[in-house]
Length: 481
Image: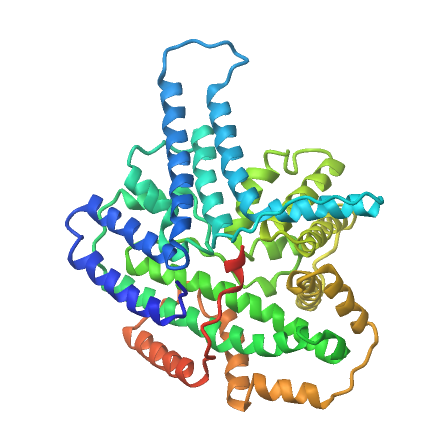
């Protein structure tokens, strides 16, 4: 079910009314209703995948309880036998194995065949005709973080299976995050939730603002971006450059729009989700960019991959290695395509260069404003450059894109003018610019001091969505991950 669909516009009010006015008196019943609503929301695409998310949830929940039983057991085992570690590893292997089969099996088989073909050996393997479950990477990582944190004794395992299933499948953030930690979200299912009108108004405002970013900005920018990428051969340097810049803002408004809607929807039901974006294109370095972009994923890789590898408490060469591993894995997490691995590898290289530059040079704080402006511009250029591998559907498409870019043709042709007219009219252009600006000055929580401000903001935003919003109910970009 899409946030920007009629189905969700009907689904949300019904769930909201039942949640607060029918099931409010009983917490367990309220949590069970969240599970039912979440499974209905997820099963809207394909009900068969409900078995998959239920299995993932049950395995991680059961793993936590088994580790607790082992820890409380008085049975003495040899030192070299760590049952809890074996349980944790088994759960990780099982869940990553499921993710691997659905998301990466065909990719690795094809890569294997290509490698042998390059050596003159032709194989005839069989691939699987399977559909990638929506959001499988998100809920798998969320479930895994729970079992890992239980193993490390950062949190206590829960015996409440309903609350745990609600934590894994919570529909506002189920298919595209943010990837919540059990320490933050799970305890919220244990506490009685009382309706708060201010929370509801704030949540509604976040939803409207997120839809604004998605429907008015991201989907309008997508018109031009798609027209260029659908005919790269006929594009020139100017149109390709514009498409690159537009895609940078498209993916930001698309993904941050989803996260904003998710946070707003969660607030309607009395939950607080983490902020997933913090003005990433104002970053002054690549590490700073990743502290601002998709924060839930970058912190997940930091805590469960980077730090276990040694983090930065190792030699410089090992630190560089750890960074490269994290970003190559991050690229692979985004999709079973060599373009995503290159995208991740580029950011790994940028991170390593940033680390080496920081170690080698000490820059005095002179001309701070000018240096900050230059740093922001450089980071934006590097990030935009890497986004082109992310956007390309194949390595060959990316190669053609950059080859055409190098032709240095900045002429304006009729094709570009036609695409530009299809993309934006004067009013839409004005509001796109205003929205991008507002995205960086409005607070992440969208909290105004007076209720009248909420009302005016929502009315104006809804009118703009109706007048300038794109039709078509396009999916969010990160649904494919």
